[in-house]
Length: 228
Image (cartoon, rainbow, N blue to C red):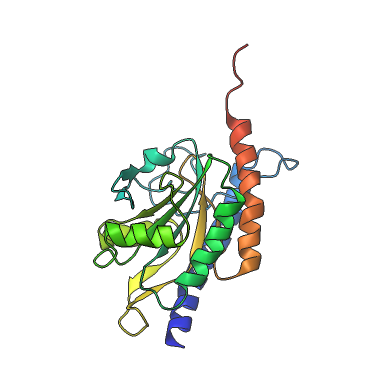
């Protein structure tokens, strides 16, 4: 019960931020009411450089290591959209359900190389590279270039969780010793969060599956027309 309340609090914090920022994102990022676009979500911590500089900050630079011992950075996802979450291999509560739902999203876009996935462990002390590789393989993921299970220092991962509008923290009172919200974040090629979804709610995961093609269409339309 304590874990459920903790997760609910983390979800409410993320949802509140998403709601307030999505309203601003919709108005500042929309170019036409007839064009379907997802809001730009996130936090604005940097000082604006101009009156029009109102969009949230992009995801900060990161350096992680995946289950194949490959270093991955923001550049790994250049020109792609990706879905991210936070988990740990020994999680006895929400992680199995979360990863089952994220696997459903992965399978929906498995044939599309422009959609990638990134799962961060919040327990790097336990979740070594072999543990992450085994975890991925048990999910049926054999191509690390499409779905990265990544590790880094715990403080770095917790800071990234905030940037992705989710929450993770050490909590000795809950099963497994960590509390986290179960949020999935959809990120565009400009490192901007474009949607947050509760990975424990199938209806929200269905919405994520519907939103990815909307974002892909926007990304395609933003590409310069090839010279003939």
